[in-house]
Image 1 (cartoon, rainbow, N blue to C red):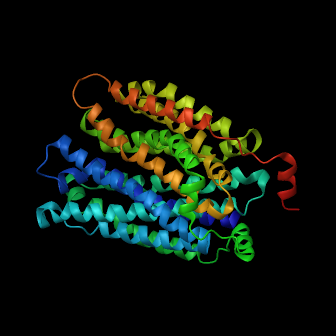
Image 2: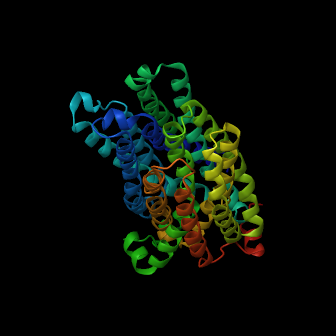
Length: 426
């Protein structure tokens, strides 16, 4: 389990490094380089628009790779998704700017971001099922939470590199070539991830399905026919997590640097510190889910998000590093109270024959609802006025309440003590 969990964590961290480094670049530099004819606000919105395309592609990736996972195994998904995301990310670092090739530059950026999202849409389902389907039932949430640490590691890697570059280079050097370095580094990381995953075994549950001839012939069709309500509920339930995370990690960076005049180094440091604590807390929250259940923690995380959004916006608007960090930290702790749990919760909600497709589609459709739109909506709501952007807080609070209602309609899936004991290894 340690080897499997480590391979899942590392691979997921690499893929999220690829995805997050684009979001940071969109907040800091892509607007003026690829949309120079726009106003500063319109350029930022356009850059966030290309950022959103990655989320739109993720459900399509979950359908494509979910079919592979349910028909041919979880293991092939881990290789194909990592390879696609890594190649697309390296290519982003090679795209000439608008000044060099004109309108072709943002179009190429859009295409490559779509391919990034397609790959990431398959990664989560494969990595989570690899650990969840190997894990003993009484510790499934704990082991399945390791891929959920991957996004924090990927974010810290992506922003750590960006922080070092913005601190070590002049503004002209960073805009000229420095921003491309993290994208090029993705190639080396992807190669390392593929090597690490080469020795992984297929999950016992898929081998059992394959041996008994019970694999789904058309997983998406079964999901749409028999589980459509569950997909919609899980997408709505998880939307708040995406909204909160990308408010902190993407919109707040742009708002802090452009509207509050805080240096990008300070903003990145505040966000990275909060993400580091969030990542460290993940397995501890998962242990609580193995003891007390999945649904209670998800409900608590939603409620905390609804209560914390106005304080978070107020703390951000102070432009004081410590207060901004506290605002971000409270938001991300509410977020991880839900997202440390769902790696076990979502697979348990679906039967094994359609689990890779169902869990991944619900998870990534939530990304469209909560992650794709939030930086754009928040940027629009925060335009104008000198006071705190309360419209952003109100928007996030409404999303949290909707997600709370969706979680309330989902069942509990914690294995009964007798079943967990029987499933535990001797």
